Image (tube, rainbow, N blue to C red; front, side, top):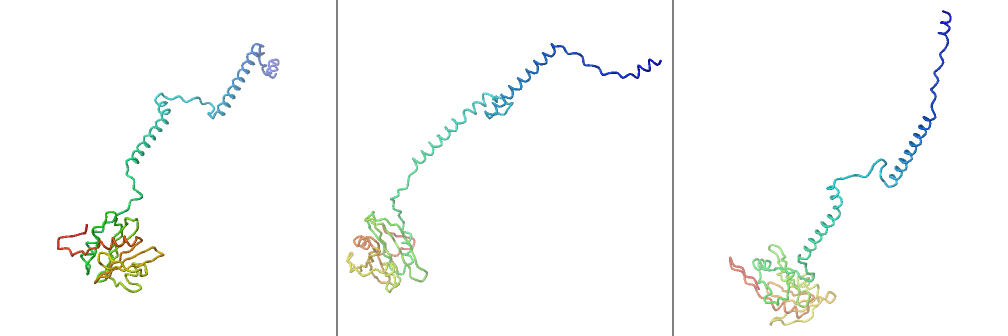
Length: 254
């Protein structure tokens, strides 16, 4: 009984690990070397992919043939579309009429003339029979009710100069009168016979402005501009009195 109790009190020693054979050691060593090689290869591949800008662990992206065709045909298709647009734009520019920078804008003055004939308290004078090379470029009525009224008619002359007819029943004389304003305070420069009528000549040298002036009962005519006296005389000689239009009938010079 005492022996059995002594045996029970005796501590049990820890079990010793079983002995490992030499063959097992060699196999474990080979496994560690293989694992190290795989780690090294993975590290090298990851570095190459990072250097190439490809995330590590990702391979090439595989797409379907239809997607590949769309991706590879995008640039040529875009280029063809741009070329088509350029061809269309070029055709439009080719067929669009261009404005002639030397073209002279022409004004239709007949509406102003008809209005002046209808309301003027004097016999209106208007050009008739001028050469077609005289281009009317401006027309303007001025004045107020129960007061003086006037008409301006501008021309581009055959000599490539400017000439205008200024016609009004405004007070003609005085420093601020109609004649002084229309001639730019021109100085007397003699007289000129035009179609049997006497016209006074004035000249403003610094503005290269010449004028012909004729005073009629109730109206004053001034033909002025940079044109020569000869061209001014042609315009003055074309003036004809315009009769009042009958009710329902309109007459305009040709």
